Length: 234
Image (tube, rainbow, N blue to C red; front, side, top):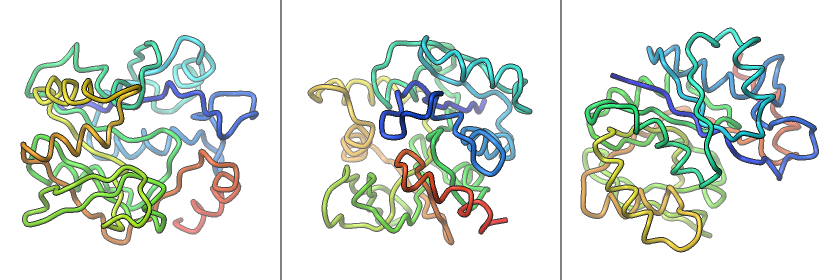
């Protein structure tokens, strides 16, 4: 089966002080996290895990009582251990052949059918790629024949590719290996580094989403542009 997984436990320090969880930052009349949920539901994903922290009660309260997507959501409360951990948390409840589709809750992106395009790409690890215009600020991904990933560079100057990942899918059976690779890193494991290491010895794939655009509202200057960004795609 296919499930959504949204890592929503971050502190949002770049955007504070806004007085509430960053995932609830309003953009064009709705909480920013709802753009991601909407895209998952539109692609046919019926059950979505919100992986969050115990101090983010405002997020849980809003999504469980006010969001139009509340019937699709399952909440997992955990310690803060980084992005990779936030993505893979639901695996403990799933079968090996289940798929987790993931994205970041403080981003808005187009085309809206991005998850459907990721679904159409065969593979146990697949990333959806966006042309953000600033690949040095994200994890850039180099692909080769048949969309197979050659490398993932994490926020490096002058990256080899303009394409950066923003969404993806993981088959649950591959998560133990990703976790093992992440365990070799010092400090909080980085998803991009684990994905790069995985791709060096196992087939991993990425889909370039044509005509794409992507906004991370984590920076105040980007958040100030968010309403206009959405309106320009209406």
